[in-house]
Structure formats: C-alpha cells, structure tokens
Length: 215
Image 1 (tube, one colour):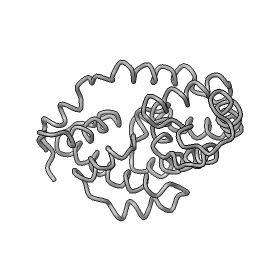
Image 2 (spheres, helix red, strand yellow; image 1 turned 180 degrees about the vertical axis):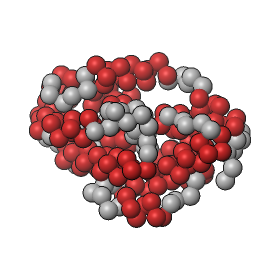
Image 3 (cartoon, helix red, strand yellow; image 1 turned 120 degrees about the vertical axis):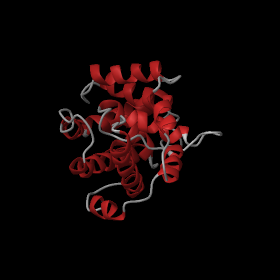
Image 4 (cartoon, helix red, strand yellow; image 1 turned 90 degrees about the vertical axis):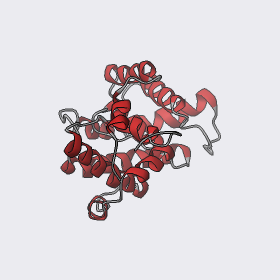
C-alpha cells in the first residue's frame, strides 16, 4: 500500500503529547539504571500509567498500592537489574534500528516481557515495548493494539524476517509487529529519503487509523 507524504509530514509534527513524552525521556536519561528502588518504582509507575499499561492492572497479587511496587515490582526489577542494564547498554551507541539489531531488540523485549509477567501474572508486552523505548528511543518500536492495527494497514508481514527473528527467545506477537514495522520503516526511507524515529513511526501508525486520513 502506498503511503502519502502528508501522512509522513503529520507524523513528524509536534503532537499534543510531545511535552509529556519528553519528561519521560528525560527521566530515563537521568536515571537509566535499575539499582535504585525509588528510580525503578518511579519509572515503571509513570511510564505504565501514562500509557494505560500500568503493571498493577489485573495483577493477581496479594499486595496492592505501595506494597505491590515495593514487594513485587522493585524486588523483581532489582534482581534482574544488572542483566537488564547490560542488555540496554548494548544499544546506546546505535544511531538507529538496523536489520542486524532486530534480533537483540526482540530478545531484549522478550526478556522484559517475561520479567513483567513474573511480576504481574499478565502479558505486558505493550508496557515492555514502551519502557524500553523510553530508555533507548531510537531503537525500540512502540507496540500496542492501535499500532498493531495501523501497521497491518500499511505493511505486510515479512515472513522470512519473522522466521529469522523467531529463532530468538522472544514474544511472538512483538516479532510479528517488528516484521511488519521494519519493512515499512525501510520502505519510507527508500521512497522518501526520510528515516522516521520510532516515535514518529508510531504517530504515523496511529494517524492512519484516524477518520479522514490519506494513505
């Protein structure tokens, strides 16, 4: 499906949520590690609640409120903190998503999805993608049901890429998303000479679902 220059231009514009998103980016830049209890709690809470993906939503835990974050979230995140920080650190010097990076990307997302599942007993792939995105904004695609719907309107699944990525320990739904999003990302670069950031790509995926859009 062809993509209009208008849709791309709108994705590059400042959105209503740009200021709020920048606060979350700044938070993760100032506190990138997972060693401090207050920083872990703050990051998981603010990113999750800002994006309607709160880790406590639907969690089958005997704890609630502050106790849930103290006994479940912080305890688990600190226990995997060193590995999570090492995984995130691998992407810090990468200027943008490339095909060789897709394997480590889906593997890291799968790792954090499993951590969040251990905490909440629920699938939190959307929260995992957003949490990683705010830590490494140029590398991780933002996933949720709206973005998944949008990418299916604009791109088809690269089955060869999906097979390759599925060799990693990963979340299969996120792999399907990446195997559509990355080919779309590359096609926009080839057709328009523009490399959208993952945030801008997300804006485009949401924009194509709005009434009256022009693809």
